[in-house]
Length: 249
Image 1 (cartoon, helix red, strand yellow):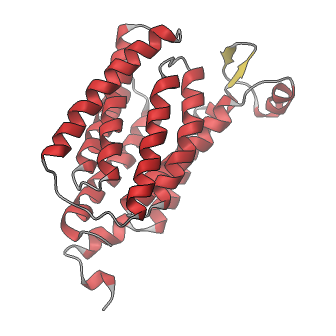
Image 2 (image 1 turned 180 degrees about the vertical axis):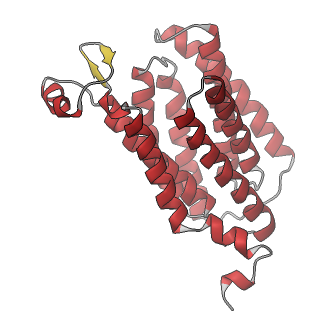
């Protein structure tokens, strides 16, 4: 009997496991980055420079510029694919997450998040643990008391590290920036740890994370990012239903 006949909601499972959705997500993220000319951002001579024409990028790189925009764009595409593969219950998603964490951490630090030096290594270790734990045959399970402990401790650790890191490593220290970084890191840290244990409610945390970012970008009238987070929210909602009612693949 095929897998589609064993699940409660086969249409949901089809959407979550769709390769077309992977391609759509990759094209969407790439298009947004190109539209915003994000690829034209470099770190050169101690500062970030925006809007560098594509034809001049290689010249800057040869002079020692760090292609911040290009690497951030590539990282964003692979980060999206990591999320998609995890939603499909493929351990390769956790493996990709390990690699993209290194790239994202370096880029985030250059964009002013001083705490990235201590927050991203933690994310790296959590992704590595998730990869190892899934490899041992971890199964999807409903929330228990440890789920709530993980969420609470993740948020506490996130805010502590963000504020400490910002002052220790001379990043941005304005209150609104630190609060938003702490909130989003707390949500993602808790969700990533819960993912390591395959809690079906992991996707609740990602939905909240996406709603926070979606709200921020709506307020900023950043239509490109609004589209991106609508996609992420859509994926998280369908993954939640699939994990909860269709179970393990």
